[in-house]
Length: 217
Image (cartoon, rainbow, N blue to C red; front, side, top):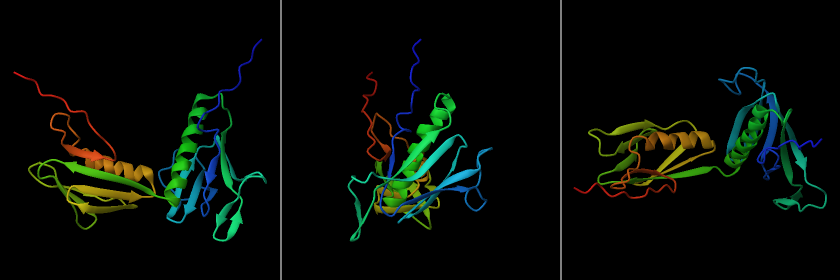
């Protein structure tokens, strides 16, 4: 009888490297750490770096080995004039055969990777307004948009997001939490999504849209 090997999550099984200056720990949940936590979740992973700290609830089926040191023959990293060993995090689950566990495996690993990038480098999302008279301005932590509607649109800037308006038709969003920055960009875009006929609208990141020809009579 042939027994097939357990299918591993391609993303989840990959070791996650920790940059110099980034710390990671698993802590018991508390009201000051996180709110709106899923039922049954009792711990969170906390990642800190030069740009700030992020926390995320971790399902009971997920295990974290942190930090793992690189093998002795691996190249060390430099922290100023001091050499430090490379560090990694391994994510695993109790039952890789379980579909839910397998899904949580890859998702958790990817989210932790985003947290590590966020606290060490941060995320930048540019937005471009394309259209006659389309403009943006920042007023008292609110983005005011003129997008061809009968009235200006005001969008509140969420906590943890910095907004720069280098030109009336350009915005640059910065933050350490990718989900928060991306959602804010989506909130701006929804007020005038790009349309294919005149190719006008709010374009996020390197977004493009293929031009369509109007119906000919």
